[in-house]
Length: 255
Length: 106
Image (cartoon, rainbow over the protein chains, first blue to last red):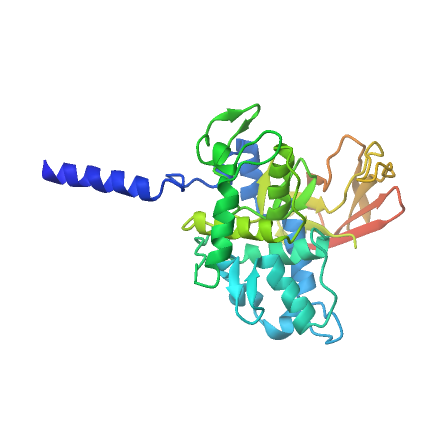
């Protein structure tokens, strides 16, 4: 009897402590129709794999004044990049700020390859990001929240709970309180970014997590933050920590 | 850069049906869309995809505005001789693409 009581207390305590994180964690594809899940699981037909192939080519292409390619430093990309996507966004001490995967790639592009930064949502940046993310396919998210990253994380958490736009809703109203319920033809997801960059049929191409976040702002009739802005980066970091343990499934396929 | 992925097995027995799968990276613009500045985006569709097997045309498809971006095509052909399976296509802007794979028939 006391054991059952203790268990109940533990479960209740755990649910209070983690009331900001949905339980059980479900990935974005769990809320997609069966045909989308099937396409995502097909390594050939998944249209996002085109960008993985493009990223593989770009990895070996020299760029910038240094005439160096990614492969000149990271020789075996499959080994060197394994698990990298599970740790981003993270505080990068060399850069002195929090970087997401796109930011890290552009940091290498500008600082190591001495080339102009790749534009957000350009095919090149998407291809490299998707190629790197793909090497962590199936590995659990494990964003390390150190002291340097904590202020950004807290900003992201604040934004996640903050009402915005003409609809005056926060992220939590859909993705925390109402996940699994129907919104017109969609099932509301838990709002994890583990499938991104993902191929979205609405976009007819692949897009970054920040593009998806901007789409949520648009849906709420709120002003969309710019690509690479502090707000979107903070949200990305918060989402990364929130999805701890969930498998990376990039590149995902979404409606 | 015309990017495409072609999937064909490398070996087959004579008479065997060999599946051929192709995905092409292409926007398949219908000509009905506007860009973010409100200007119309010019129509640009892949007009045809042709498969040549050991030098002979064995399959052809005409794609239209009803086909989504990054088209995926799949068909089977009967393996009868060793040779290249070559896929060619051309879009409205005249850009051509080509990928090939070797099929060994025993």
